[in-house]
Amino acid sequence: MITGIYRYGGLTIRSPWKLPGLNDTVSRSVDPQAETPFLTIRRADRGVWKWKQPIFNWSGRFGLQLHRAGNDWVFSIAAGAEFWIRRDGGEVACDPGDAGWSETVAEAFVRRVLPRLVQLRGCLVLHAAALRSPSGTVLLCGRSGAGKSTLAASLHRSLGWSILGDDTAILQTVDGRTLVLPGTNGVTLWEDSQAAVGGSFAESKRIEAYATKFRNQEVTGFAETGLPLHTIYHLGDAAASDSAAVTIERIAPSAGAGLLSAQSIRFNPADRGAEAQRFLGWMGLARQKRQWALLYPRRFDMLARVAERLNAENQKRLVEAPQ
Image 1 (tube, rainbow, N blue to C red):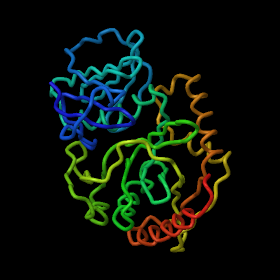
Image 2 (spheres, rainbow, N blue to C red; image 1 turned 90 degrees about the vertical axis):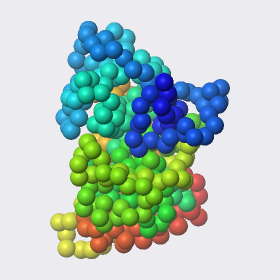
Image 3 (tube, one colour; image 1 turned 90 degrees about the horizontal axis):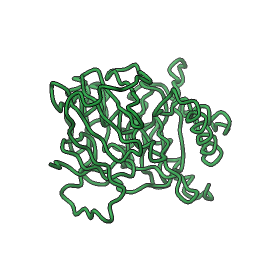
């Protein structure tokens, strides 16, 4: 039984469970002939993948692991759920574990498994927030804790920029253009950031899997198709300085490729051939798109100033020649 129909990374997803943070299209007309490619999620019996080979373990909250199962793949999490991925990425079978389909399992699937699954469709995935601005799509890249989600929420509140994803940016090259495909809807914020910048969204809910984190979603205004990528910012911390300035510095393509690679989300880090191919993709993107270092002290009172500066940069680039 299909509970919801969602959009993510160029896919239309049919799921028997609710997928938090995704754009639910179940209330709108969906033409099975036009809405391709589809990804179908189905329930699976417990223990169906007894024979699987461990490939890679990620550190982190969910305890994500990758396994090989014949020609296919299995992701598992510490909570006991397993996700079988058909080798072409067109089908997922999920055993949610003894506790059943919980918010923790759903969060792990949306936040950890889906960004890797779309790579089987030829996408590159970056640890970044993505926003739709008047000049095109803007990416905010940086390590965990760099302030991507907080700044994205601030830009949404101050400038009205729509958020295409707050943690992962899904990129695809189509006819020589780099497009950012829609990901999660809205932004997740820790409690202090929620108090500072979380009041501009139509819906806000505390996330069970995190306890002190909130999901903030827009009801309308999200993109259903890919949008052209325009500018990439890499967030750096200027907190060591007493200066309250917002600094934007151009990054050379060679350095930019390294920064992009460092923030790349990988399907299988143990596959050296795929890693080399992925780095070539980042090199091509670094030559094609401008990248900038965005430096400012990590304080909530600085966010309005950062938004003002980025808006000025955005207005300036509206009149520049296309990249």
